Amino acid sequence: MSFPSVRIGLYDSMKHLFISQSHFYLNAGIGSRLMAGCTTGAMAVAFAQPTDVVKVQFQAQVRGAEGGVKRYSGRHDICCTPTRLHFNNNLPCHFTAAFSADFITTIVASPVDVVKTRFMNCSAGKYSAINCAVTMMRNEGPKAFYKGFMPSFLRLGSWNIVMFVTYEQIKIHVMRSQQSWESPI
Image (cartoon, rainbow, N blue to C red; front, side, top):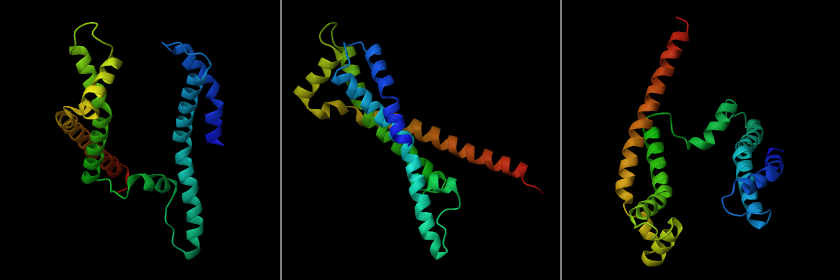
C-alpha cells in the first residue's frame, strides 16, 4: 500500500509544483508529467523498499524457523543485515564506507565541477554552462568531464575518511560509556 499511495497520491501535487516552480515554460504536457512521475516513483521506492525487504525477511524467517534455526533476532537485525553486507561496526567498515562514499561523490560531482570551472574561466558571454558542457563533449569526449579526478578524489577522500572514521569511533566510545553508566554494578 505504501508504494502506490506515495506514487499516485503525490503525483498531481508534484506535477503542479514542477509547473509553478519552473524557470522554463512547462505546461501540463509530457515534460512536467515525466518529471512528476519520476520524482514520485523515486520517492515511493525510497519509502517502500525498506518495508519490502523487511517483509521478505520475515517470510524467510517463518519458513526457516521450521528447522529450528532463527536467522534474525528481531526487527532491527532484519533491517540492518541486508544493508551492512556483513561488516562489523568497526574501523574497516567505517573506512570502507567513507572511501566508497568519496568515490561515488567524486564520480557524480566531477563533471559538474569541471563544467563550472571552465564556464567561470571563459570570457563573459562566450557561452552558457550547458553550451560549455556540450562543447566539451563534442570536442574532447566524456573523459574531459573527469579532468582533475584524482586530486578531487584525494581531497574529498582524505576529509571523508578522517571525518567519518573519527565520528564513528567517537560514537562507539560514547555508546560504550553510556552503557557502562546504565548497567548495574
